[in-house]
Amino acid sequence: MIFDKHQVLRKCIPDKIVGIYYFMDAQDNILYIGKSINIKKRIDQHFKTGRKRMLAAFEKLKIKKLHTELEALLLESQEIKRYTPRYNRRLRRSRNSFSIFQKVNKYSYLVYYVAETNPSSLLNFMGKRQALSFLGRLSNRFTLCEKLNGLDFSTKSCFKYQLKSCNGACVGKESVDSYNQRFEESLSSLFELPTNCNLVFREGKLETHLTISNNQLSQFGVKGKSEYPIEFSSYDEMRIIITYQKKNPKKLLSMQPHSKNTHK
Image 1 (tube, one colour):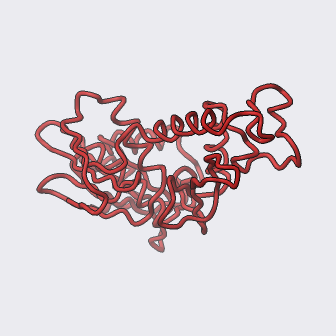
Image 2: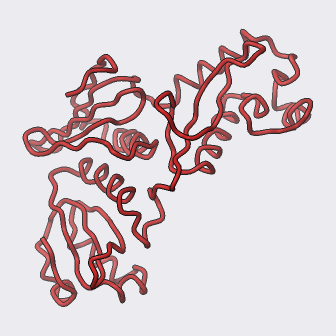
């Protein structure tokens, strides 16, 4: 569905449409992408509190009608990464994506590190700063050494060891077994979901199906209605799923592990 600016201002959009919407200029450039379970109501909110420059620049509104809230959340994330609209800051992809990886260092400690994305990654992010920030929070939560994780470049002990908030793995003061046990705990906490699984969420009579492979969403869709492959993989989609599950625990119909090569 496409509405010109005058139709939008006259509130001609049908009520209670679930889906995603695109504010576009006269040349069909996408200015902003959003999602809602009631697009008409959400557009009204844009005109009350939205960006004045975007509202002045748009000439038409495109609406893609969808079926469930979770479908809209995930497709919005992918579309923002695809088109990188000027007025969307959250969920935009950068030119180079970065990921968190794990390895064993030369002293047998398990460590994380950040590098450009490749198929062996644990978590993908849309920028290096986002990946480093996440790794910093993870290190703090599980008292992991920031020097071992590539966040502290001190020549001797890390700064947090001097503050007595690191147990000294950076200078061999903590045993490998003790440190690696805590690392494994951090690893198991990353996703709160099985590494490879199929999830089904029920919204009314509709079922949204998700396939997670190697800790990344690989495809999603609504049974009998739609199916989308993930083209721009990042931690954003996993965060959306986990947040949605926490807010709607009763909507999770099933969670079934699968091998990483299985796709629905």
